[in-house]
Amino acid sequence: MKSVIGIDIGGTITKIGLVSEEAVCIKKTSFRTKDFNNFLSYIDKIHLSISEIIDDKNKILGIGIGAPNASKNGTIETPANLNWKGNLNLVESLRNKIDIPIFLSNDANCAAIGEMIYGNAKGLKDFIVITLGTGLGSGIVSNGKLIEGYDGFAAELGHFSIKNNGRLTGLDIKGGLESYVSATGIKRTIMYMLSKYMNDSIFRKIAFNDLHGEDITKAAENNDFIAIKAYEYTGKILGEALANFVTFSQPEAIILTGGLAHSGKWILNPTKKTFEKKLLPFYKGKVKILLSGLEDKDSAILGSAALVWKNI
Image 1 (cartoon, one colour):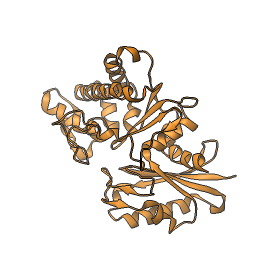
Image 2 (tube, rainbow, N blue to C red):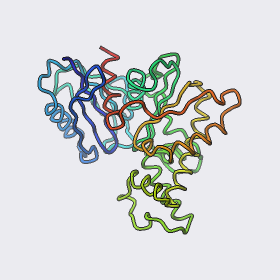
Image 3 (cartoon, rainbow, N blue to C red):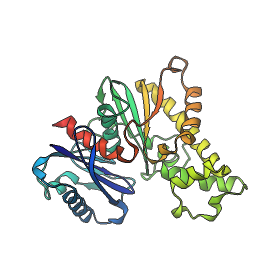
Image 4 (cartoon, rainbow, N blue to C red):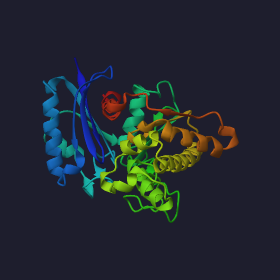
């Protein structure tokens, strides 16, 4: 049985899986991206991890890689949420280790392709995927075609400025959307809410670096005032931004995926409420906001693997 390798390079975790054509993740592994300050050492770790999950490389049709700031030239350029800077020749570096066809694209573009092949975008020709991880990524499909741009950097909506004097993104964009709406952004919002309100909260005893997205969801479920306020604030900003994004491609659906999306109603309810309120009249009731149709824990791997099926 022929299979492909899917690799998702996240700001915090790198996930690698062996995937069948039926979108089954047969084997998988992961490691912390942040543990590698040297890019070539990181490539060695990817190669070792691939070797650990395949029995016969001759049965592997290709490797699909989703990464932030990925270009059509096989490079990652000035990534905001990774340890390495400059232009990183990812495809060439990995090809020197393993002789298998390698395909690279922006991580959110991979998510969009994955939804189109395996998930909730089956049959849709116009949709947007928003990935809510360490940062915020976006993949846009219009008339059935992925919008990639001149060299692969179209749809960097995470760096779309929503406040001229707001928070900085990792690329020093003032008020960039991902500095508010992402796993990192909501942590920053928790700190903001702690300074704004005097209410008791579990987060008054937790340092920023010890705070995780799951903690915020659990606290909201336990009726923590600060957590609930943080989700309301985050959802309002996301809903406004999505309403603006509708104007440039009029999607049939916007699909949310990634760690922050896993909070379910806590992010969805305030997002949908503000989204419908801010839409122009002729868009109202026409655009659905959905969660990913891919299995949560494997969605990033499946999206990257779909890049191979699309290209072979």
